[in-house]
Image (cartoon, rainbow, N blue to C red; front, side):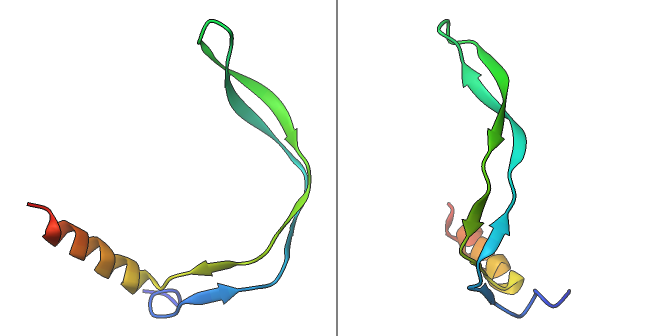
Length: 68
């Protein structure tokens, strides 16, 4: 258990993400997959809401008990 177990975390602050490179999956005209190096421009995330881990565990248990 840690501090995220019982607490719902809400962050409404702007989060500035700097630009970065990534390998993007793409298909060519023959339908074959390949990877292409692309650059993702910097952007601003507008916070996040993260449920307490105990709530996530309860949800998983409910889903498992509902399955036949």
